[in-house]
Length: 143
Image (cartoon, rainbow, N blue to C red; front, side, top):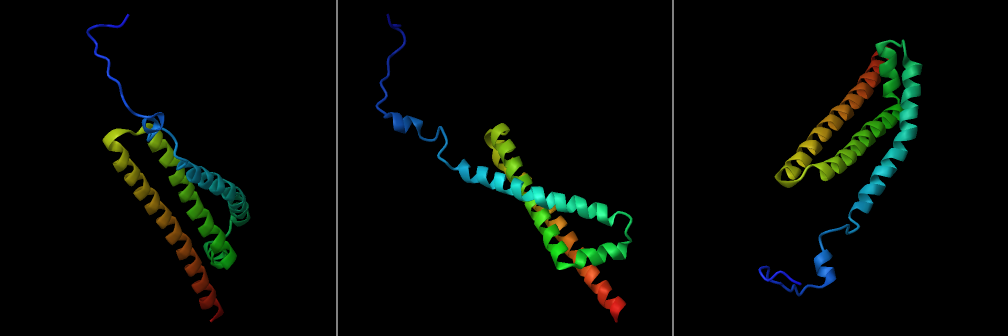
């Protein structure tokens, strides 16, 4: 028994056309792999950093600057900073996608990316400043 007051509307759409835009189009696979790859790369870098912090505990500022000027240490620190903020951006993007809807989604995503970019840039400049200060100290002391 159908309700006589409610008209029956037949929609002439295929199941495929009804499903488009509703589910995964495999676009998240690359994001998922990037998150996992950056997490795996951060494990040894973080371990290296913790060991270096313990090794440098109690060292003077010139000793730390000399340590930071070594190419291997500069490269490892830059890799750690860049990967940390890249991984942070990926994780926060998932949170925004899951919990921020409507008109606020785009501004929230842009704001988050801007803040993460600026913090990453600050960290990168700090590492480079340490590396350059340490290399100039070595030349001054030797000269």
